[in-house]
Length: 274
Image (cartoon, rainbow, N blue to C red; front, side):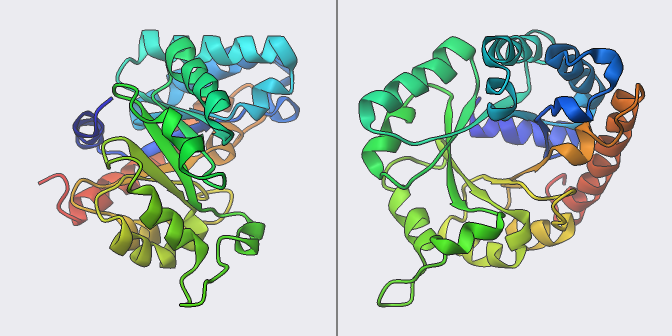
């Protein structure tokens, strides 16, 4: 998917919502018997009208071994078949030496058919470059994450007072264009999005942390939106596990719809839909 196609979807659906497909069996209805695929299909069908992206996190599938990985593959195939305009992000947070990264990239892009993959930048350019250059595919680089421990490394400063996350943003722009690379910036760091935007004004940002983690959508838009929206805001358990009963899909649709309505207003307020 190209950057323009993604922006067109945002305008058409008046949404920049990404639904995180992170199914926790302990929070799923007992009636499903732990069937990840059945759960995902119901969530996808319920929330697709309100979202422009889905983001399955591989950890929630790998924990079940081969059965779980099969559910991951089948989930991606289901979205591709029924909602071909959806942007699919494989949340895998890969990061390894070049040959290994090439295998990771081929697996996610060629075998699974995902549009994007999250990648850790810690090992540098040769660990990221194998993910770049696949036609219509994206690298989403971890830059400023929303977890409590992010300050352990990301906020460390050099002799000039520049934090590490800024070096990630500036250095990585030598590796790929804003048609190939996005960045993860947590919603709980919303006030820092102003500085992020100074460094990467035209890149899309994948923003987790809205909803269950307490991030503010209004603040994210105020600090991070650009002329092409430039935001993909993810909500996972706040949507998919809003109910653990048999009405889980209906409640998920209600939660996604409420977020989409808020996003539509923000897109209008910032002149994106004009």
